[in-house]
Image 1: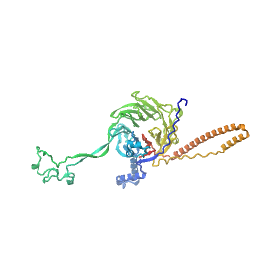
Image 2 (image 1 turned 60 degrees about the horizontal axis):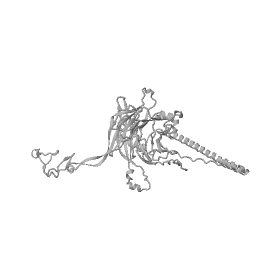
Image 3 (image 1 turned 90 degrees about the vertical axis):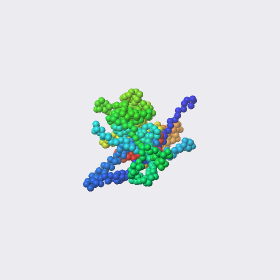
Image 4 (image 1 turned 45 degrees about the horizontal axis):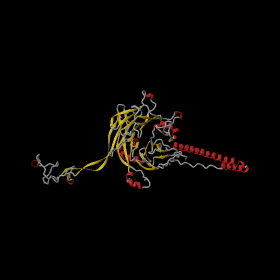
Length: 562
């Protein structure tokens, strides 16, 4: 008061969100998959069933089923900037587009929205829009290497004239796609009487002439000498009323995907990420050792801006795992490495950005951490350490040897940030994903399962056992007896009671911490025993403006909202 500034009280963290199931695409049970694929494949193998044993036929069918199911696994997912479109890519090289429909159905005028006292709580709904084959399997003859068609990343580009633009990449080749609606043109008002048509378009009679003379099959006269039109033939001044010229009309529209650019032969190693620049003209592509800068309109030339390949490959200690442009500053980008470090670079410093402007990594004195266990939130203006650290899969530490043996140690779980920056989400095994609160003081940590009942894997927090008050009562009785025996000890007794209350509060806090540790240990043990490491949720995306998450579990796309 007294002319000084009043310090604002810290804002309370937002409450935890209650996630609900929205919809799912491509969910099928194992029995349905088997029945459907068997129906299509039984004709192709029925001729060998007589010659081959049943075991061989069953094995061939099983291999065919596994291969068909493998190509359907979703390998990339991305919202556009508006959140009205969603793109997914799979191992078969296909890109599937979805569009939001509930905003169109419930959209109203500005005046109608201003009259409402509260915001509309819509249930987000998407529908299938179109799909196209982005990549095909290839073979590198120089290196004798097969290049699979799996889509590694998808990035939306700026829209123009109602058309959608996006980038998709596999291990070696990046493609720039344009998807737009085109009208289907049809020829109508033909000068043919369809009711009198004969065969495949043959005409029995014509409306040009009213003569009773018969026509040939090709439309000519039997007697060409007497009825053949000469070169000096002229139409009458009023024209021929019965002659109708064909008219091209368009009533229907269809979505057409066209590849505008192909960016190839620029990476010797597998491409792991692509990122659009905020200038709308350039993008970067990163593989294990290099990062290249491209112009969207130039496909035969790129600039190498980061190269971490050593002169001797035996000296290689880390590789690039991801690269991303700054969302608003076109000159800033960041890339991460397999050592868990993040490097920020500025394109204005030099053409070859071998020297980073900022370096983010934990100090070695704090001990090494397994990246799969932790999710860390960094501030680019604070180099001392992460802002927050979240325990995602702490139960994996005893299982590291098993994960290494089955190559699961190399699984890359994507993370996504909400549009308001208050929450972050990442995937886990057993088709689970976790949502954490990033705000100061937030304790939100929700575990969800990619199913129609996302909350069924929640662990109920047991009520803390009630503590006996016998010791507290004894303290009070001792203090009261002291007051009765000697009045001078009245103040001392009250002080003793106050100290005992503080000790009790401290003891309760310690007990609460012990209960939390015990609960975490029980949950970790339960997860360690119940987790399925063969099912993993690697890809998920957060809606840019709403609390809505789309996640991919094998070949199914699940969507949730809060």
